[in-house]
Length: 461
Ligand code: SAM
Image (cartoon, rainbow, N blue to C red; front, side, top):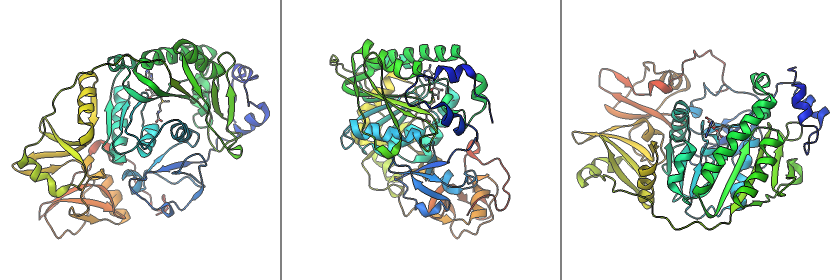
């Protein structure tokens, strides 16, 4: 059993809902219940998960698994049919559903977004004419975020790679801002024993300072009446209730209560100074890891502001005709960016150019591909997107072939047609091949390929 720092346990002594004995017991075994969240846009049947147990009670698409399958060797994982996510974090769904009218067209910012758990969740909850700006400050992590967003397959997302202070250029812009803040990480001690050695009171203080700086930078970008959702995976009051107090006092934000059910065993707390509501997840009480969430509404009026925007380079009629047979009849515009064409929801094009004028874009909408000599060279992102037409030429692979394809090996398959074809597993798109008559080229992206070797029996097929 990992030894938890004495200082840490002492610091939690008076924390609401903390029970030393059962907390220590929960940390005796590094066991956590694995959980996944299904992508409603891809409509995978939950019977795919043979070890599926209960639903996560606070999330409409979350499930606990009784065993731990190898996600790496599940083609549907690579097809973006589900995301492996810790159950407590899925409580974000309640915060959103209970404070925001999700049927409306809204602008959401997920400020600390990599690797993309909350962003893919938000995408599944907002309406098709809403926009999510999914931001990650660390460039390498922004790349991973982009890959996960691509797998999820939506087109109303913009991935940015900016510091929180850069958002000052978009004052009063967002209807919802989620700050899943970098923190001391005590909530993940069972999952990541390394984090135990890294914990110190000094680090908690350091995290608090950073959390305040991030919030001070970003709150001006929230619209009047907008919702701020703040969360951490720390148990420390300093990073949770005390930050909530600070938000309410410094920025005059109104704390919001979220209804929870008795059987969920989530601990509702009320902060000492400003009486803000907070929601604590303890692993001895819930089936999930340590987590904290607090929710606020901005009441202060924001001055009307005009944001810079520009005209995007739209495709010509001739170029559109090249793409048309590949795409479902959806309301998107096609934009030329260099040689690459991407699709973005028509109703939000102006918003895209506003964001583009002020931030550093990593990705937006869905990359469709390149048009070369009146032919489309399709992009991987397009294969995984939900806007690709049903009748695009495709071939279903068996399990072994699918794994070889995902390892970017030469796959032995018989194809009747030549040219670009979608590769699928159980009817879910994995990527592209190009059949040239005498050989087949595997276009699975190198940076996403499975590096591990497959041992028979390591995944429940
Ligand atoms: N929301 C993510 C999810 O659900 O998958 C997890 C986010 S993780 C708790 C916190 C993120 O904040 C990390 O990706 C980290 O790179 C980023 N971060 C670190 N320092 C930051 C800073 N000063 N400003 C903004 N983000 C920061």
